[in-house]
Image 1 (tube, helix red, strand yellow):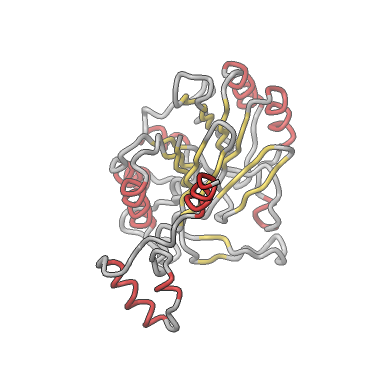
Image 2 (image 1 turned 60 degrees about the vertical axis):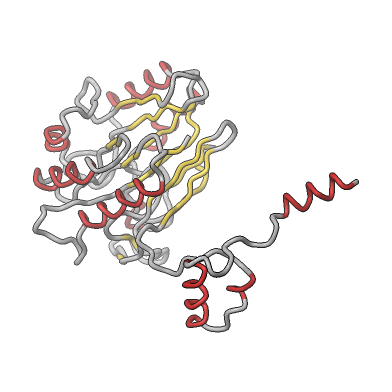
Length: 309
């Protein structure tokens, strides 16, 4: 199955910009690209910081853009969001008994189909995240209820330090409590989060994780500055394409606003000695005047050799 991961959309009121950029336009570009290239995806997960200041107008703008998606979307809370305002703008958004934006969604009836579990790690007035006893108890019960299913766990705050000191100080503040619940059940297969506005992946206490750039602005890869300084950048936004198979979870990072050259590998293009020459060949390839296919695939060659024995 295929799922899309977006994070940190940071929408603002329609007449505003953020760091000189238009978050709504950048999200709309993501939606158009997802619809065009991934219409077979079963949903889009957005892991928090949906807006920058939690304004009603920003949530309304978010809703208007997301209505253009050709597939369901699943929203999570971030530290920049306002929970009550979010729930007013999206009254259909599930919540737990404590009013937190926590819910489970099964993508199919079979035990091989994964279940998305969305967690709410936001704390009003704080940039760091925390799971209170109520939210941890909900997760414990949820994982128990889906004990025979593969769980994809999504939240906003990373439970681990990633080496950017400012962001590390405002990560999830009680990661041990989260880990104890996860470890008790053993059915969480992958962890998705946002907050850091950077691509990163790895393993945390035996659990694979991935995160990605935000939709609007990014955090620079600065592993040297003190915790009172945060580098920003206008690196391209991205979304993740999760391919979930029986034996693996693969997360492709797609820089959907990157405008670098696109072409099909072929010996003719390989021979180009300048970008101008390459551009001419790309135009010919686009017009189907030179091949788009590379030499015979190696797999076909091996099959032919095997058959000839």
